[in-house]
Length: 168
Image (cartoon, rainbow, N blue to C red; front, side, top):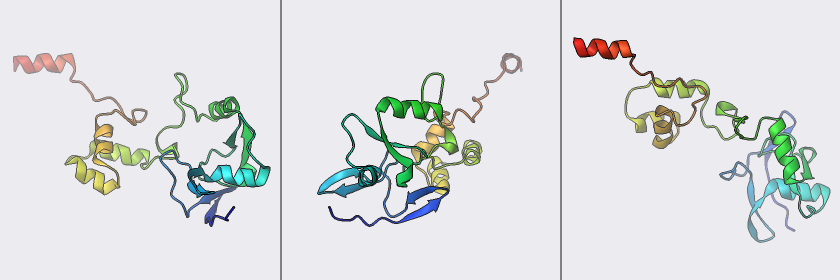
């Protein structure tokens, strides 16, 4: 196996990869042994702990998908992975919304930026460019389809004001 050159920075106890761009799911993807779309954290875990046993997957104890610190990687079942995610509020279920907003690892915006976007007048594509996001994301925020946990619902005019307008 040919060595893969990877650059990392230390963030707390994590070794966070900065030389490779994460895939859509947040994990670092590499070409390994001539096979594309292989996860780097899995390769590091196999290097440190041997081949992944059948029926097991690589678990991150730090919840940082870009981390390749071998001390944060271990083998476990999917059930163990889901249980750990639930205990650390990383799993979305009916009773547990999981990590939301700026605390989500893939979030491009902070809570205050979202509040600014909601209140900003103007064309959505211009607003999107100011924050380095897509017009679609701005639209979803303004329609309160996402980031609802920090946004108040659009206020409906009260019945009194509706009645007052009809008689004025």
